[in-house]
Length: 498
Image 1 (cartoon, rainbow, N blue to C red):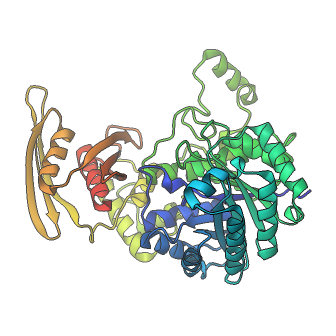
Image 2 (image 1 turned 180 degrees about the horizontal axis):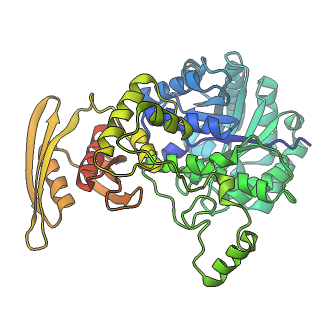
Image 3 (image 1 turned 45 degrees about the vertical axis):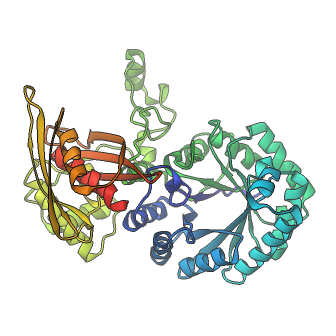
């Protein structure tokens, strides 16, 4: 059997569906380019029919990505498939990924369709998608709670209609590894044509089994892994790409597979996604967590100093984790800065480069030493604020341990200058209260976090805010040496998304 595993990354589609993890077009393109550099075989760029913003993001990614296949999700509906094709048609390697639910509970309560109607719809829409692009993937939503007889039948019809990739998703994270292996083998036995195409799996992590289930599926013949960076995704998320690839790399004695992933790009990709979404990685997260290669126990430290293999089954360098010695400062020029950002994996056009360089020089006037993390933060922040409805003009904070904090915040709202004044227990609380007086919106403050990006008292402060409006969660982020300014702009970033 083929030993090649194809990695299908859906961080831009399923991952973005995580509450508060929405990304704008520029952020999606940044991540897509890094995924391409990571070596993923397929980038699922989005759900084009979901919104105009999603459509434009998929279209831009399809134009820019040079190596990976660019896939777009579509329901088994002609309008969705038309929209998907328009978004992805300029890709070097386009794919339409269409799906329909196949479990009894979904067919009855969500689709309100009979099984034969579902099969007919799937067959017709796969055939239609195949008339538009050379590569079509078909997914049976909620497959693991579906009948294997029904799945074998619908898969055969989809394959005859032109699907070359069949996805068997564990949509609600319900299955267990042994049962998933048996489930796939049973479908293969009942299907006439499934062994002629690539079998894919998309496992959710509701019971913490997404990675284990994906590996069990590989044993049963699956050769495409659908996963996300840092395991982000709806509810408890998806199988984590970095865990799957490092299991394969580290345990070749068990998983004798080949992949196209450049593992040295893992840590950089993980950090980029974390900064873009404002979703922090737990310290003990496998592979990419802060503590993944940290040793505090004296016994462990002694062992590692003598021989790293005593407590490290893989090296930090294998995922691209290493201390950087390159230092930039206020005397550094455009050439050095361009060389550094290209080394970090960013490809900026001239306008983007000029903006980033101006921000770098401004930061260099405030900080003695500029680290790679500072530069990455500058580039991944929302730099183009000229067209925003809400912009910060200035603020003044009075604060101390013997007085209440007082904030004056002046905003530009569609060209109109509005000032808010408020007092509270702390400077951030006061600034937010002052902005609320300017905005006149019913907002619920869901979450706020602040962390330093680099060492030193002059480190950039990375602020992340989550606001709830009209039942939806919106995230905002910003970086600044001034943590209050970063917090204000992060708040306004979320408001502008609303």
